[in-house]
Length: 156
Image (tube, rainbow, N blue to C red):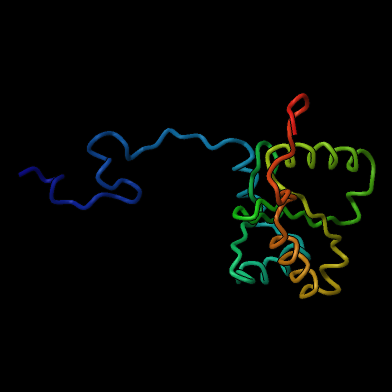
């Protein structure tokens, strides 16, 4: 029996260490790195809102600073495909409104609904904001009762 067989694996090694898997060469994409940084530096409104959303209101699970493509949204409910953005006064300046529109378009094209909430509203009434988020999350995307409409050129 070799001496390294008696030693438990080091942190992160597990059984894969013997097969060369202990030292992962995986490089997270830039949005994941940015999301990890943002989780450590939440703004005051984001922090207050997160303290309520992390308790899973109405059984809904939310993620904090979640990447969607190249963007990072403040909060996300994956089961309901809802992205939540807390906007401070900075979002009204310079080119940020245009960038927000492009960002929202990308997120919507990837199957998410976007809900923008002002930071002032969060600080003034966080419980009301959480209730509004839950109501929006529980409202499904528009789905016709009879199924999808017929395509152009098809008989009805």
